[in-house]
Amino acid sequence: MTNMKNKTLAIFGVGTYILSVLSSAENLGGSSVAPTALIAVSGIATLVFIILATTRLWKAAKGLTIIYASSALSLFIFTILQVVTSSPNGSPVIILMNMAKVVTFVSFILVIVKLFRIKNTIQAI
Image (cartoon, rainbow, N blue to C red; front, side, top):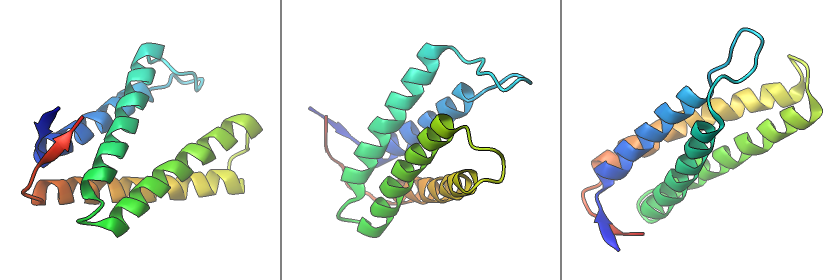
């Protein structure tokens, strides 16, 4: 077990966001051009950040952590629905997915800001 500072966790979160942007690259045909390994590492790192940030901020900002975790989960579910159903543009699944993306992004920014402002550290795995 090592001590992880909140600022380190916030920087890790920014790194996971950059990884997710890099792994979402597509060509003009809509096919992914990122290596599968990069996509897997990005997904795992994002999941680890969501879990660590949620547990770290649970007592300090319970509402924010609930919004962040639930919006990330809903974004995951809507993305799976879009892939499975092959929804056309403008369908309710696409609209809900875009709304979930906005909420997840805004709550992510608020989580990063909150992590930078909190002074204490706790044990992290």
